[in-house]
Image (tube, rainbow, N blue to C red; front, top):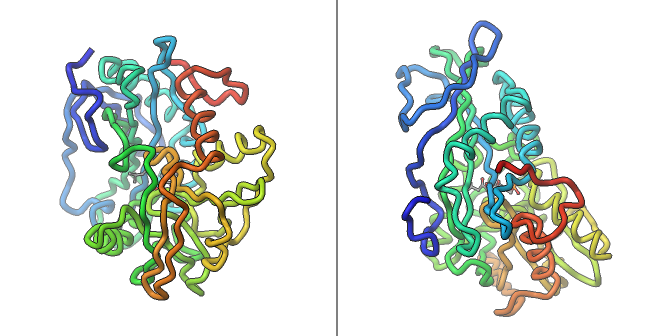
Length: 337
Ligand code: PLP
Ligand code: COI
């Protein structure tokens, strides 16, 4: 076991043993290779560097109460990377190769899977890069697929403590017929300016609105949004939202708890009617939202300083499956060891 200070790691890069790589050329993928090299050598005219021809994924492995290590919903991430690759006209990794790479990266980095009690986990970052050397703006028939990992702690400082977020119309994250529904790096590039502004003002995150009317909630930083009211789990629906694996899981858990589930447009005006609100994602898990300030209208909505009961129950149910404390009735985990 590595000697890291498990209880105090944040969300950042920590060197591990190996990463996995495969190359697509002449219409086929190479065998997966495993290397301790943290660098990739790239030609200066590789298309991913110039035109953003790349996408990525994020998923976690957890060391459970029983000592076993579980990967959460790896097949869902594989399918989402396929959707991203198709939309970006990149070579599409097979689900089989994606899952094998993730599995083996965990197996070969076991000492970096944080101990059960720490609450930390091993974050996996699959990456697909268009590796064609070219100057023209066109599809890349060559690609590099890689998976590396890093032990991570909470994404937001304070873990499960409610976060303060801001609605700011300074920047749209994604356009309705753009790339918001896939995990393209460019989406994150167009969220940096507003994110930096929010941090400077003392907020954890930005709530992105739809790019047409700036009236409907899209996402909450690098996470989906959900609100709870009258026994219903409500989450926004839009063509420019990333379909979150965590949100999909929470919708199922909400149903299991007897809640109604609604996926539909959620107007900014509706925010004050929720009794609880949260951001959800692999990195964010569930981050309860304590308050939302609309910087343009000055409207301030507070959900209180405590985690709401429904959010807490959802969080506990999700964590129980991830850490092997509850039966995995939906078949979401892959046991690595
Ligand atoms: N939305 C965005 C923009 C994200 O970057 C993420 C993170 O992956 C999510 C939502 C949450 O998705 P998931 O639950 O699959 O991690
Ligand atoms: C994740 O939750 O896996 C993400 O991709 C968020 C990340 C951009 C930090």
